[in-house]
Amino acid sequence: MVKVIMGLKGSGKTKRLIELVTRAIEEESGDVICIEKGKNLTYDIPYRARLIHASDYQFGSYEFFKGFLSGLYAGNYDITHIFIDNFFKIVNDSDYEKAAEFLDWLNEWGEREKIRFTISATADPATVGDNIKKYCA
Image (cartoon, rainbow, N blue to C red; front, side):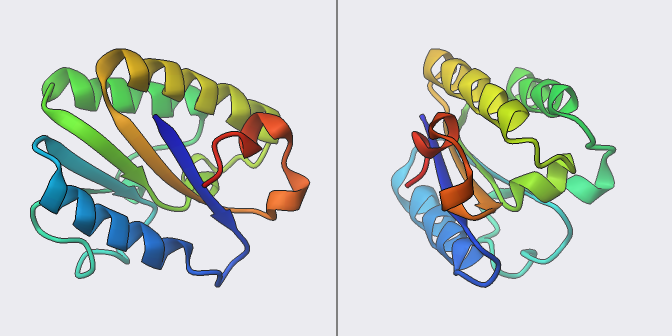
């Protein structure tokens, strides 16, 4: 249920994410959410997707992110897909072990609640462990 688009800066991750959001809106019957760090995607994401600017909130830990996502779903059980752009910038933590634990939690939760997650992350895929690579597209 979790797919990570990983690459170095300028490798086209955000462009691919935008294409996937557009396709999800056309093909899925539930609500599509897109979370981004700033306000860069305002005109790129179709209006039918709920665009959330993480900069409007005090993201700063994986625990906060878990609570935020859980709250989103508690308020809307029709969510079928959540896209997250610039994952490491949103949580402001590039500890790969913590990231892997979060992705494992996200995968378990997503399977249980039938939510798919697509995440873009700026990192060199060669430097992350297998615990993250297993989610890479």
